[in-house]
Amino acid sequence: MKHFLMSVVTLLVMSGVASAQQSKSDEKVEFRPHWSLKAQGGASYTMGEAKFGDLVSPTAQLMAAYNFHHAMGVRFGFNGWEGKGTVVVTDEIYKFNFVQFSADYVLDLANIIGGFKHDRIWTPYVFAGIGGAYAFNNNQAGSYLPEYKTVLSKYWSLTPLFVVRAGLGTDFWVAKNLALGLELNTNIYGDKFNSKGADGKFNPDFQFNALFGVKYRFGGNTRPSKAYADKVAAEEAARLAAEAAAKAEAERLAAEKAEAERIAREKAEAERLAAEAAAKAAAEKAAADRARICAEQSNNIFFTIGSFTIRKSEEAKLQKLINFLNTNPDYSVELVGYADKATGSPARNMYMSKARAEVVKKKMLELGVPAERISASHVGDTVQPFAENDMNRVIICTVR
Image 1: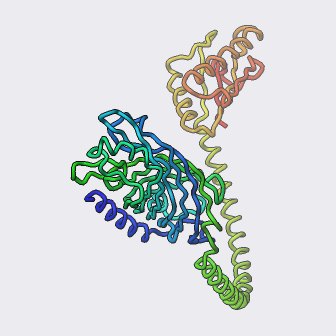
Image 2: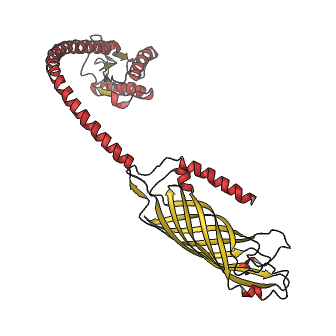
Image 3: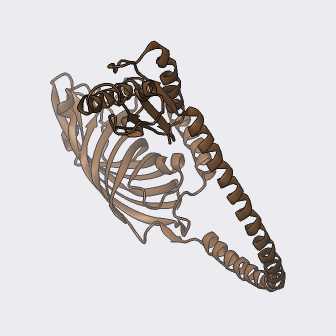
């Protein structure tokens, strides 16, 4: 009884929590109180001294439920079928039939925790209730009375028994109003249920049930939401008012806009002319600056007679040029190789100018200058860029 009272208190507290939950269904619909019908069948176990399998019986349940809240409801119906007991002295099993009327208070755990959702697929629930049980075809137990009056002193067949019950279950909605359900429940009866006494002590009997079945919901669980309809009406009224205000404002702004556009056009034209002049000046300055930088960074690498090895005296100039190219990726370099006309044959000089251009290009590549930014060519002694013969053994590096 103590445990039962604690269960009742727990259910009442959970009910208060459920009442405070806000609906999370589609805003166009709200919860609709509704009836449903559930039919289930399964197996029951009447607690006793025999082996578990010897005390298992068939059971059935038919319940009509009314959900008055998205997380709460009540249900009424009939359950029962068969119970079993045992005479320990002779190790004999007897069975009896009974029918039971039950009234349960049900809490939908999914809607308590997650709020109301009209299309929820899985709905676990718990319940607690009371009822009355009535036995019939109990003569098998009665046949033991002459010999085992003490053992079967609680034999009953016509006196109803008060029942306290609780359990849990879940429904899986396979269609809008049709669900498959599984339920586990416990029924607590007075000491007469299995026809056996407890030597004058209060010793309630227990029967545990596992049930599977189908549930049909009448009329669905939703109706059009009044709050949503009011919201739509308010939004429409606000929209019309906003349109009227916007129209008046648009007419007022039209004149201001026309004047502002005229002023803006005149200002824009003046700014355009000024910008073009500034852009032209900036472009001329940028071109002059680039030409100056190219001239400053361009250099000549000189070689000794008959050699295409870079001299130490020329390495600093080449390194400076390479550093500039590596830090200024928008610049490139053109290498042109030459040979002095006073030394060697034209063929030899063509070879030497090519070798000198290639060795400078190779050095640049090794130190990180990308190949696509290096242009290399050679002209041998066909062109003499300097009046002094010795200066024509050269690679002219022109920055672009």
